[in-house]
Amino acid sequence: MALSFEILEKDIAGRIGRLSDGKKTVKTPALLPVINPHLPIITPREMQDMGVQALITNAYIISRSTEFRERALAEGLHAMLDFDGVIMTDSGSFQLSVYGEVEISNQQTIEFQQAIGSDIIVPLDIPTHPDTGREQVEEELAITLSRLKEANGFANHANHTLAGPVQGGLFEDLREFAGREISEMGLKFCPLGAVVPLMETYRYKDLVRVVMAAKRGLKPGICVHLFGAGHPSMFALAVAMGCDLFDSAAYALYAKAGRYMTTHGSYHLHELSYLPCACQVCSTHTAESLQKSPDKERLLALHNLHVTLAEINRIRQAIKDGVLWELVDERCRGHPQLLRGYRELLTFGEELKQQDRVSKRRFFYRGTESCLRTEVLRYHDMVERFEVGKRALVTFDQKVHSGYDAVFFFKPPFGPYPPELSETFPIGQSEIPDWDNEMVKSGCIGIERLAKANPDTKIIVRCRSIWKNIIESNAPSVEVDLEDL
Ligand code: GUN
Ligand code: ZN
Image (cartoon, rainbow, N blue to C red):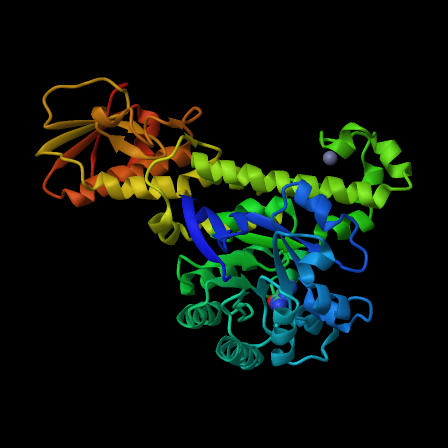
């Protein structure tokens, strides 16, 4: 059966969802570990016991393998791998991007993936390298889209799901166009392609621009897969943009290179004196005993997969609680390039605001970046709807004053609020440290929005003199009344 995707909860543009064909279900966000059928360092059965509901393997490698080709055709992929969850197969396009050519046609790979009983099949898209010039990107995108149309047309897809990879290099208009074309074809599952070179070189700012562009073109109900994303430090950022699935061999590749993953970066095992994790492997080893173990690679892979899966669960919980921004903020401080990506994402506040939910469990101020969060932008929109009368006061001192048609208290980074909203989100649920200039500036944007929406009202802001300059620069339409003079 083809998979259907249902969105259950949202935060920013991220979602908790359910991908299901009626029998098999994948909770999203999810990680699909890459399985190398030749030597699975962790078996699919073990993975299923760790909570893995879907995995990905390479149909091209299987089709070229004397050992596995006939078995896969005779037994089917699920029996061969001993995994009864969802299996996605990749077409060989990744080999194409690495080796320059593959000996398989679009039709052949689609037919083979169908024949071995894959649940999610991928056509032979062209993963154009991000640094390719526009003309070639356009040509290759046209080929990818025509192969997708071909795949969509010639086969019966009732028993599986056809994935529609979104390509377009670094050209945001092409990514958006590709997203729209693929949506029009009626595809419900879209991987974002050719982003591995961006992630390998920490180009998270470019990654954010490309993903946001593709998402703009894709219909919101489409399940979005980020091809080749496997480091847990970037999952929160990707989920915040609306990516639902990741696939990666990183847990195994890092283990092979002796690298130990954490949510804020990786270590070479020999750099560690202590193991900052309590998984089965880490609680039964020291850094030294792990380093010396003959089973080191497999044990590292188990730890890496554990960390990766735990992060996915943490993200699911953050979405449920509406605290995904705080997790993104935390994770993106693990590397300056991730911080760049996070700051880039904040420039898309106006777009993200439309998708974000109205109420959340809490808002923790975590530094100046928090001033640009969707909750603040949404609040500034809401300010325009407050009743103000002819003369209104915004007071920084939290005391009720008489002689005005309306009195507002002030909570940065949001801005003015009527006392009756003091218990509602975000005013009542926000925790802020001592006021700093940036948050007061953001709050003043709220005051200015109130003033601009009510041009016939006289608005007076009562505050201590230290805030005078910030108010005058950011809320020029109001009068300042100093309370400490
Ligand atoms: N694996 C990583 N990136 C890609 C991509 O762009 N296309 C396909 N088919 N597989 C990938
Ligand atoms: Zn561990």
